[in-house]
Length: 307
Image 1 (cartoon, rainbow, N blue to C red):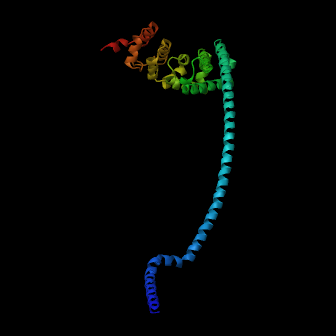
Image 2 (cartoon, rainbow, N blue to C red; image 1 turned 90 degrees about the vertical axis):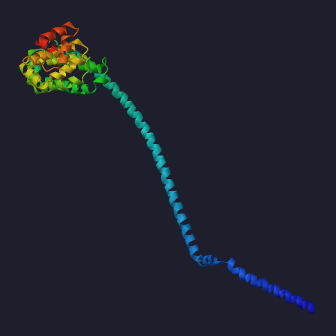
Image 3 (cartoon, helix red, strand yellow; image 1 turned 135 degrees about the vertical axis):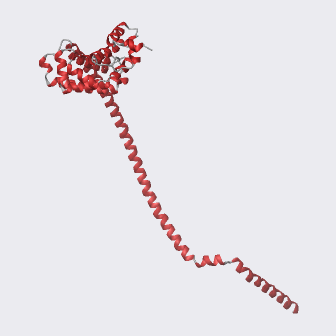
């Protein structure tokens, strides 16, 4: 009996010791952070509910934006189809416009070619003083302005070039008659045409027949007293000198020399405003007609050859 009591007492002491150890360990296991979490558990629950509600709203918003995106993609595909259809229509219109432009160019070339041929026979007085002639001069001026901007892009054998050549040939033939010169010089449209021709000379290719025709036109104008005064005021001799230096066609050089001879006959400068190099170039040119014209024009040329 005594032995059982001793064993029981020993077991109880062991239990007490273990209980003491557990009491010492519990504060270490359940620290302040865990206690704090339990304390704020309701707050966390509330925040979690708020987060879930925000997620629900965001899901709804996401679905709405997905629908918008799908609608936008559908509209984009529809617009691409419309754009493709519009491009096909534009391509067809461009082709049609190109054909119409070619037709108009051929028609204009043929009509102006016929007009050029008829103008060689002279223009009647009744035709000269009609509103049609004024409109014709305005049309020629605008055509020359457009031509000067697109000179290098036009094929020399194209209908467009033939049209411009025909117009230039027509006004040259008109200015070849006394009555034609009188009308052009005395008409505001004619004076404007003269100014335009002078202003575009430098922009034209020196090898074009258009330039030859326009130089002939200016020479014809210079025969008229008022025309000579207009050219003397507006035409710079140095610009003609530049044409002479660039020209490879002797007719262009002769055309420039003829204009110089007609406009600057009373000029005291033996070079007529040209540079000595340009004068010597003409005087020593391999073409006899150019040399003869230069010798006649630059009477004091010997002074220029002196070292």
